[in-house]
Structures are given as structure tokens and as C-alpha cells.
Length: 409
Ligand code: HAM
Image (cartoon, rainbow, N blue to C red; front, side, top):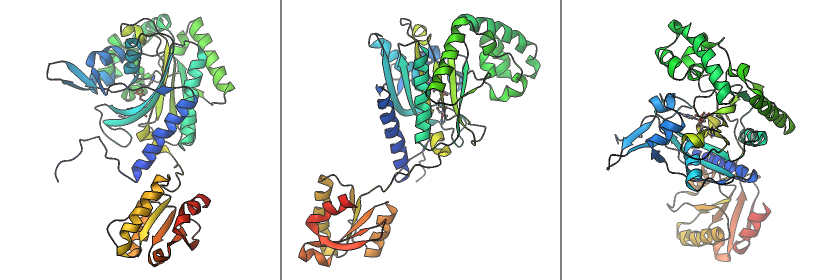
């Protein structure tokens, strides 16, 4: 067949998909433990939402959006991220009080595809809206850190910085602009253009790092409020036992941030796509979208990258038992046994193709079954042979007792 999946997208099939499923369920459960509830928003939005929310001068909006017109000529965009959507949804619902929302799903960015950089990729994330205090930041940062531990990503550094509030940023902007103008000959053409429109984005440009290495950093311009918020966030992280490193050059690539920004970087991971996740505070985003001022902080983690960086997660057997049909005539009996056991809650599979016993055992192994139930000659006496594939122990037991045997394994 010559129809392929679009460049930069992936098909994820069993058995590999089991790990993806686990990753999403583990995140949902963790988010629930921290008091976040499932938040579903559309996979496409009005283009305006991202242009305003994420920022016109960002790589994401300038170069990476999948934008199209619908049949009525409206400009729509496949979501490149979910923060702007969650804030929009919160405002649409009245924008009252606090929302602690968790989400997971595909995001879309037109990037040059490589390992860990896809055009359709999968994020899990949380947004905490309506709380401006430092403990909200701490909670969000901790949640991401614990998740990476649970997913077997070793040696994660939480890189932390503060980029300050509006007034701090204005001072920083002027100083940075001047500094960059003096070196514009050495900068890429995108960076040169952004000196005037959005100089902070230049610090985030990977191709310009050599030049910007000694550039002024936002931390030097923090006002009193930003400073005390930042030190409270740091103290909070220490209190809950999340290690971090201050990264003065970290500014993040999206325009909506203020104060706290952070990224999770596995230490042994290659430099190109180094962060497996990131986030920060975005107290001005709701207003930019036309809503009432609403503080917010959140994070998103990329599953594609997490699974590449993970040392592995022990998921145990994927089936409780695989039923091997030793005599082709016994297939209907095997089918009724599988039906009964599944109704009792066991994870059971059975091969309907009447292959050799050897081939069926192989399949049981390949499917990751914990045990095998052989429906064969003993069936006339209402018995089956059972084998625990972990311990290797095999015995013949009454068919009525299979459920009991599975429980005792
Ligand atoms: P982001 O840093 O753009 O932040 O993306 C978060 C994570 O998504 C990245 O660290 C990475 O793991 C993953 N990711 C991004 N682009 C790709 C790609 N092309 N292929 C594979 N993985 C990718 C945000 O999206 C913000 N919405 C995070 C946030 C939430 N800030 C506040 N709340």
C-alpha cells in the first residue's frame, strides 16, 4: 500500500501502546491525587486564540501551526498546546473561583521531525487557575517531578527561573534590546528581526546561543514582588523535597509567561530535545484573551520524549491467562470458558485459529500472559491443565476452580 501516515506522525499499536496507555492512566491518577479533574477542550480552535495567547512572534505561531479554513472560510488551527484552550474554556464557563484541570492528548506543530520531535505528539498537563500564591507553583512543579519519577525517567533536573512581572520585563526588555542591537551582525535573521518585536525570544533561540551566552538575564531585573514570590517557590520546593537548579537563561518559548518558569531535563538525555516537559506562571493570559484578570500556573510533559528517556516501567503481565485449545473440537468450550472468566473480571485471550499447541504457547508468551489454561483431553472430566508461566508450575484442576487458581497465583 502506498498510503503512508503523514510525516512526523506515528502509529502506536499493541504491545507498544500498552506503555502509552499506562503513561496516560498514571498521569490521570496522579493528577487526581493532587486534586485536578479531567478537562476536555477541542483539538482545533480559532487561530486567533493561539496568535494572541501564545504570541505572534513565537516560533510556534510563526512557523509551526497547522492552520486551515473551514467551509465557511473561518481560520482554524489544530492546537499546538492546550494552555490557551483551558484558559479560554475557564473564561467561557464564567471564570469564577479556581479551576484545577488536567488533560492529555495530541498536539500539533509543524516542526522538522526527528526522534522526540514529532508533528503530532502527545502531551499530558495540568493548569491551576485562580490562585496567585507560590504554593500553586510548587504543587504544579512537584506533580511533574513525581510523574517523571513514576515513569522511570532517571536523574531529572528541574531547571527553574523567574522572568518577572510586566514592569520588570519592560526594564529588562530595554536593556536586552540594546545589548542585542550591539551584536546584531552575529545573530540569525530571525533573531535580528525579533530584537525589535520580541527580544526575549532571542534568548530562547537555539541557533543563537553562542552569541547570547553572556546576555543580560531576567533575574537581574526582578522587582520586589517577583523576588519574594520566587524565593517562596524555592523554599516550597525544598519543603516538599523537589531538587532544582536555577537556570538564569531559561525564558521558555511561549509569550504568556511571567514570574516562575521551569523545565524538566533528564541529565543523560541528548541536547537537541533536552526538555521532557515545562511550564510556568501566566497571570496575564486571561486578560490577553479578553477575560477578567485570572492568575494561572501549569505544566505540560511530552510523552514521546518521556518514553524515550525512561529506563522502563514494569507493567507486569498484560493478560491473566491465555487459553490454549489442545483439541480443535474444544474451541467452543474454550470460548465459553473465556467468556465466563472475562465476566469474572480476568484478562483472558484465546486463539480462535486452531493452530498447533506449540504455536499457541508461543502466542501466550508473546502476548505477555501470566499463565496458560489448556482446554484438552481433561475437559471430559470437567478439568483443565493450568500452567503459571512465571513459576513454571503446572497442574490439572477442576474447571470450576480456575478463577480461584488465578486469584491464588
Ligand atoms: P512546551 O514547552 O511548548 O510547553 O511543550 C511542553 C512539552 O511538550 C515539551 O517539553 C516536550 O516534551 C513536548 N513537545 C513539544 N513539542 C514537541 C514536539 N514537536 N514533539 C514531541 N514533543 C514535543 C507547552 O506546551 C505549554 N503549554 C506548557 C504549559 C502548560 N505552560 C503552562 N501550562
